[in-house]
Image 1 (cartoon, rainbow, N blue to C red):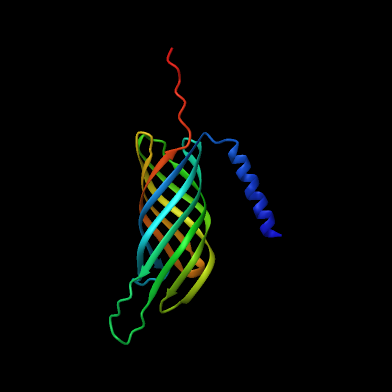
Image 2 (cartoon, helix red, strand yellow):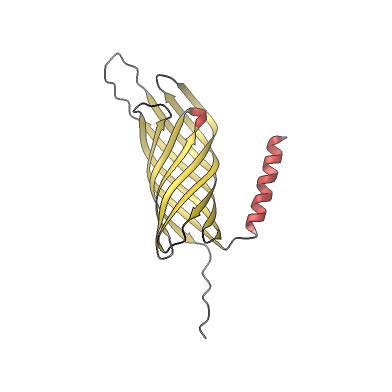
Length: 192
């Protein structure tokens, strides 16, 4: 019952948002992916990250962004001593969800912050002195992004994206670059 109510509220919100959209575009990002653990130990994995977003601009300073992405990481498995266990952090997952962006509407250099809610679907491994998690399936995550949009129309972006995955005691993220493609031509005003 709770899932049905949540789905209904989400669809209602999407319908209300769709009525106030000023501009639509697609954004593609690609970059360096990584995974680390919640514990205070030096443990990470590195890899590849890419993501696509459907951008709905509601105000010059506010956007809603459903996203679909992929992160593939490989664990660093060096042992300091031959008798020590090999601790690892691995995340190979599809990322799906929605974010809201607050942006300073400044041409050429517009800093922004994003927060949202989503799900990761894939393989997760966290093996540390305190945790031994090996999970396949779906988990929830909270995406946070800090970045800057560059260019006259703010179409080029440099960002640091983070996905907090508490269920598997991991934080995955990326240092990425992106480019936004408008879906509609801007209407020019006639000169008088």
